[in-house]
Structure formats: C-alpha cells, structure tokens
Length: 100
Image (cartoon, rainbow, N blue to C red; front, side, top):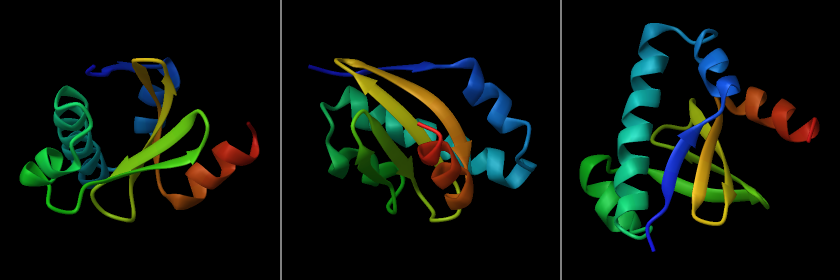
C-alpha cells in the first residue's frame, strides 16, 4: 500500500521562515519523500535520487524526513495519509514536539 502526502497550512507558514537555500533543500526532501511513499516505503529507492535521505519516527504519529541534518520535514502519519506539518531546523522540530 502506498502512502499519500498532504500538507497542512502550518507547513506553508513554516516555509516563510526559511531562506532560498533552505527552501531548495525542502523541495529535495519532498521529492525523495514522494518516491519513498510511492515505492511502498523503500528507503533504497528514495536514496537513488537523494543519497543521504533519511526517514525516522520521532514518536507516534510524528516522523521526520531529511537529506541533510540542518533542515527537516515533520510528518504526521495517520493510516495511509501523511501530512507535512513543519519544515525547519532541529530546534524548530524540538519546539514543535514539546508543544504536542
């Protein structure tokens, strides 16, 4: 079963705090994430387009994806739906989790 990626409005708002270079990293993460989901969560397939792509569970239902340690995308996973909530650095992700 493949997963589907959606976006909360909070994700769009989080992009406003990033510079152009960071937004480009987010685009690359989303591209690799789409491949990951469409290939039934094959890390190998996603790493073919982004060799340093990672996807890990933070705590249920939250996951993070990234290609570099500086910028990450936080995803809420509910069944086969994955919703991007936040794009940001480690501190922003940490603050988000503290408020959940």
